[in-house]
Amino acid sequence: MAVSLREITDANAEAVAALSVSEAQQRFVSSVTESLEEAEEHPQDKPWFRAVYADERPVGFVMLSWDVEPRPPEIHGPWFLWKLLIDERHQGHGYGRDAVRLVADLVRDQGGRELLTSHVVGDGGPAGFYARLGFEPTGETDPDGEVILRLAL
Ligand SMILES: CC(C)(COP(=O)(O)OP(=O)(O)OC[C@H]1O[C@@H](n2cnc3c(N)ncnc32)[C@H](O)[C@@H]1OP(=O)(O)O)[C@@H](O)C(=O)NCCC(=O)NCCS
Image 1 (cartoon, rainbow, N blue to C red):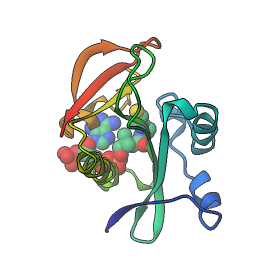
Image 2: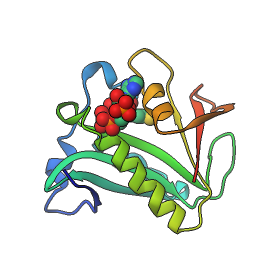
Image 3: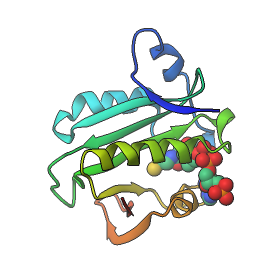
């Protein structure tokens, strides 16, 4: 399956909003609709988002802070992976990894040298996923206690 990142338009908005993670995973990421509301409410965080497609099927959602002015501890950047979810039914097929690789390629093309992210710590969380992709803890945590990770590009 070829993974791509596509804009959210009137044609696919409903299908993308219907993507969801398992109940147990909901504490690790907000829904697509909540994420889009957050984007709307925080334009200063420079939100950039796309649907993740496997061939012609929407399977996930990704949102970044795109070339944002870092203001730690609240805003990390300039390139910060803010949201990532792969729908429960489509997890475990490499789509999450491919989506992060595509994002990393875009950021590298913009001259970015590192991609930052953060995650809630807990069983069933994405720590192992990010470690597999080469992210390393920076040693910092954000004001909500999320661990900050860095991927060198
Ligand atoms: C985390 C998430 C994005 C992973 O997406 P995915 O498409 O299922 O992951 P992939 O199939 O691309 O997995 C890539 C590798 O990571 C591993 N992996 C995936 N999820 C993992 C987890 N939770 N813990 C440990 N390893 C994990 C896979 O086994 C695979 O390993 P491999 O290299 O040995 O094959 C997805 O499970 C998800 O949306 N989870 C809920 C929301 C979430 O936690 N998002 C991150 C918020 S910061």
